[in-house]
Image 1: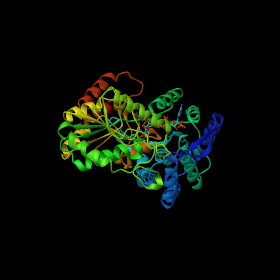
Image 2: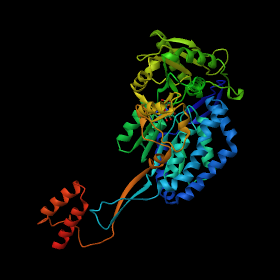
Image 3: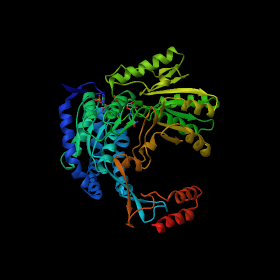
Image 4: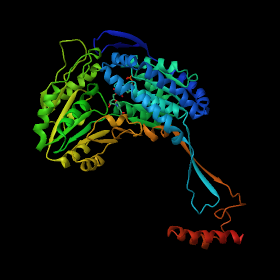
Length: 506
Ligand code: NDP
């Protein structure tokens, strides 16, 4: 059994790839277990220096790597370069500067009631991290968690998606070329069965990016052990167009945010709420601008490529058909392109979308802009929030203060004012969802700490023969009652006086 890969552009056969078996996965986990302590023992500065080789390789060979990702996914080479590749060296640079501070032992306050003691928080690697990644951004969504876990001092096993095996092999080759210690980073090609085997292997955390349905299975497998799991799942991101939205920027933002990577993006614009006073102007301009987009193969340097995954076209068609049946109107596009090979689909505008339609309730993951007319921003915000998903969202207005107020009220993990998608590329901003979009955060400080265990340490430097709170209790109750009351009233001096009295009694 092997994975057969077909080009999303030409539909020609591009190769066959090994499916790692359950036995091989379990063996890989054993090897990772053995390799983990050695990697954890290497000082952080040297781990970062080692991984810097990858940053240099990506910078030197960027365009070539981007072409390979585009061959695999069909996305424009500009997208492969800027949205897949670029973020990896940026994240490495960010962690080179910040990781020493994020991972260092922190001294924290100790209550005055505990004299002679000091308290610390330490962060230490978890051990072996399993990363399971999807096909839509097969490089970035695998490499950023993989590198974060390695920087934090863990061994890693990555299972990339069977849909994009060329990128899986590309990552494997790149990681092999930087010569990490043996078995510290293993990339296992395979399908869902390989992913399932990995969730059952001897690992210490599972970092999963993918659909809600698979995420639930991964969480169930993690619960059996139990081990921590982080789920980065789907979205149905809201785009709120206020009455005073800067028209040109907002229209271009909607087009890019909804159609980049052919809409196959967890942070894609999937619900556009437009206030009725600006509705006609906005939609007319959107229709004018969508016609200017070019569609073609990566080598043709067009704006929109084919879809990556054949069965995703069926999902898009099903969502559109359901919406039409329930009263929506397609006002641009709406069909698979049939006069050329490949998985090309017309960029689509669909209006009169409402709750109860699949295209409103579920993730579409295609080149479709669903538009919902609303009375005002208040209704837009209420509808945006009244949904199972909460990954990212955006609000578009000339009034920054009000924009920020609305963004603050959006129920999602990341919100933008007059911008779309880009916040995910800021290495300092934690990323992750709420509700069915998952939980846990990566990127930023949280993105490293999420791959560590915290250990709290308290050290007694006074080394007295005993403590006032220890046995025996006889005769201590009146003092303890006074300490209790003084503490709750914030009278520290009173509490300390009573402690001294207990000591003197001895
Ligand atoms: P899937 O859930 O189908 O697959 C995700 C990964 O899980 C793949 O590597 C897949 O392998 C693997 N897998 C499949 N079955 C199992 C199993 N039983 N146990 C363990 N692993 C398994 O998602 P897609 O690849 O289709 O990705 C699209 C989804 O990902 C969308 O919902 C999208 O919104 C979400 N996503 C979320 C992001 C976020 O950051 N929140 C970012 C990007 C995407 P294989 O593909 O080989 O079958």
